[in-house]
Image (cartoon, rainbow over all chains, first blue to last red):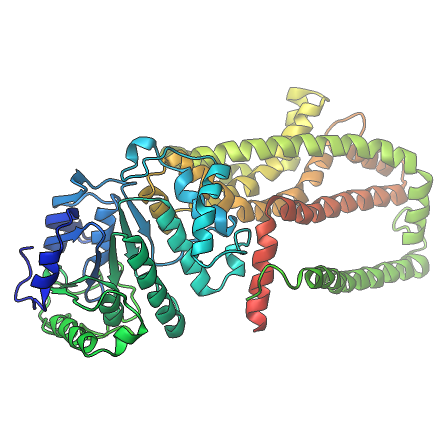
Length: 314
Length: 276
């Protein structure tokens, strides 16, 4: 943890002291640059250090186009970084090591809910599989049998044989999350999982996810535009700067363990929300003082696109 | 947004109602056109060798039904064999194009060029080189139908690019796994669009090939009847050809429901969403 420049340690010592778990994800000195169309170089990540311990929930929040999606591509093993290292359980990140949930639910319309959830078990070589599961590739039938109990737990019982087109938005997101969980990888990467949902459904999903995490002890790295979502769900919030991204602040969330709806109204929640907002707002205005303007190859397609660094997105 | 339970029977009843709504306008229009034709042929032209009336065509066709049927069978056989070959080759070529960039760049222009070849010009050549057998007819049907199939498939495969491909790669899937699990099923709706375009050319392609040289078939039968000034039987053959094409076209819909049942569900859900 080197880059928490002036980060507020809001009772962080407390959490750190209790936390003796080993690091599951270790990102150190991560740089990434893209070649631009006019022959220039666009630096997206500028020395990111970030650690997520086993069983912990970390959130990355930052302005649109600040390199969060690039970070995910690198951790998911889809893009090789320009420099720096990404270790998952001590081994270099590679495709198939982390379970990745993209922004859109990306359920395939020709697969039933159970077949969609089982997809991750049907592909990939044994050698690429990390984690405790260590299963080989399964046939469709075995894979579906393996995910069925999960679907019931995800509130999708009775809809196993339905097609995604028959589900509501919240159910589709739960099915996509079931597909991510079913892969049984050491680390889950959630890329704005609830960004496309209406506010009410989103809040319900956040409450539900908090409950599921408390029960299962998943290790999660979440990217979000939503300050409230980050504070509510995460144990640690990493605030990114404008592109090129560095970590502007690392904020330990010391809210009580069962994160329920009551948490939203607690004074601690408001204090942490303000801390994150301040960390986001204490940055130069986009475009003006930023080192390079213009749209980059990064996603930049968030709901608060162009709203500036203080937008809470909710 | 509907659950899986309610509305199944309603959907079936709705489908029958939709079928009726879809069918009556073209049927009505056809009746009007045939009626007009009957009037023009009966009261203005008076010459069955120039323009027979629909009634004359129907009765001549009915009298010669065994000859028509005898000539329909080889045409159907050529259509089936040619379209089967077209199907196999289009999957092979589109798959090759999907896996191998150079193949895509090399094959695409040739595909387009193959469509600009006039079948009328090339049909006699095929017969000269390959004789009166099934083969030249089969190849002409393939040539006439191959392009829409291959192009729609190639586009369908490419629809699996982007986010779906990223997801599959993040799962550690191989290129082949991504192809089988995502690109092929995702291409099915595209394929049926191409199939509907291609199948309307198929019977016509077989008839053209027979025109250039055959012992039996609707193409050669038409030519013989034309030489015998039996215009009514020429029209009867045309009617059979049109009917075959329409039936083949219509058959793609139940086939699609069979191959891709999820499309029906998806369309119903989209209709429900629009209705809300």
